[in-house]
Amino acid sequence: MARVRKDVWQLPANDKTLFWYGEAIKVLQAKPITDITSWWSLAAMHGIDKQLWIDLGYLDASVALPFDPDAEGFWNQCQHGSWYFLPWHRAYLAAFEAILLDAIVKKGGPADWALPYWNYDPTKRDTLKFPAAFAPELLDDGSKNPLWVKERYGRTGNGSIVILKTDVAVGQLWQEPEFFDGPGDIPTSFGGTQTAFSHGGTGAGLLEQRPHGPVHVLVGGTKEGTSSDILKNNGLMAMFETAGIDPIFWLHHANIDRLWESWLTARHHPQDPPDAYKNPTDTDWLDQPAGQFVMPRPDGTTFTTTARQVLNTKDPALNYEYQDIAIPGQRPLLVARLNRLGVAPADANQLAGALAMASRKSTELVGQTSTAVRIAGAATDASVQLDSSATSNLTASLSVRPQAAPGAAPQAPDRVYLALENITSTTDAGVFNVYVNLPKGANPAEHPENLAGVVSLFGARAASKAGGPHAGAGMTQTLEITDIVDAMHLKGELNTQTLDVKFVPQTPITANSKVDVGRVRIYRQTR
Ligand code: C2O
Image (tube, rainbow, N blue to C red; front, side):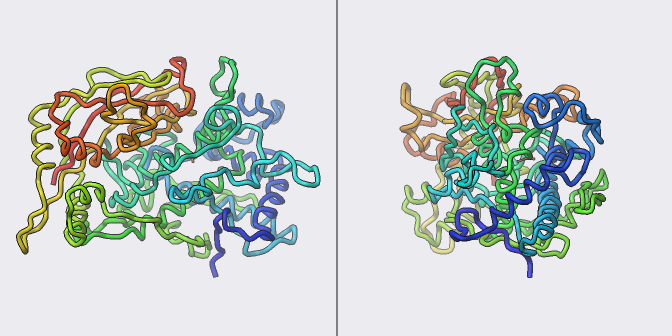
């Protein structure tokens, strides 16, 4: 029987899962960083910044480190902006879990212990709260809570962690049938862009973009204060180099890993391509000829593994499954539109299928900004210049109404995407909302129907580094805006030469952070 990773919010009152997690953390934290099974080396595998760790008190400056803290190798190994994001983090969590389990069993704990997950479910408000056991500094007996760390500054920097349902909008994951995409493809796929090994590239998949990124930043955040060193102000979860130190990191990633399992069960539409909602069969992904993941064993030795070796979580080497991978409220695509048009449910299903079938290879640029946009302060406006012939193609597609004639296939409108290309930043600790076509002078908070989505800067700093593998190209994120554009069209508001986009920071973002969106583009995915 595979061990069961349980929902942290559904643990029974007398459950010992988190108690044993804390006990294992104490064991691993007592080991020196030179031991690859220590808490510190495990966190450094994700990322390390030597000076920052020393400044924060997590590293003794006099210790001779076993690996170069500036090199990408066994340490600084995490895969981001890449189609390896999901398999790498799965292998990493499994290695971590095995080391914890070993410590737990040696202390007399349960042999079926498994890492719990934090399911921030946008349909259940209470699950968005920060898991209670991780919050207090001290336990009832006055001892230090091993699940606590100081550097969790939250959304505004005052330590209160507030996550909104729009920050963790998982619904869009079930509308993206393809696991990976090619460099420069719009829209982004579920699992990321086909890349070589990447410690912070441009091509984050939808799951990595959100909810993954916003949860990192909204927990870590940036401390209120005036230190000129941006990194020192950031919470642990807000940066690759420190995220693994925070015990909540592992529950967050267990949930990301669980959402991958959920995606594999997403409802197919009759016209979906044969590889819809399936893992890649490409051997560059499965077998990683470019290099394998290197992981530690509880006995202090290492082993290598690949995506192929982590696909089945019930395989004895991984030996876990999730308590629940059900998809909350998967809705057919464009329900709002179909309701507006009064489409019968049977036709609606066919429409949704036709939409899912659209190939990513046929996208047309509809419009773009002419200059980079710097995001700062309360809000930043950008105006996207629309190409008139591409816009009339789009309008024509939106004008299509389902055919009432028996036997005639209903036609679907094109899907429309807003791409924020080449986002560069000197900080990872930022989250902003993106609105499209807000009425003049309107309060964005009163117009959720104009919210294209939430974007986090988690990973932006690594992707911005000149000289890195991607030479500072920054990140690209895509937001589907079909519903918004379709509603505009129905109201006759799409007949202009521009589309207004408004960036509204959720976290403090100053001009000092140099958050630039290289280009805002709108694409239509044709059928
Ligand atoms: Cu490698 Cu959530 O980060």
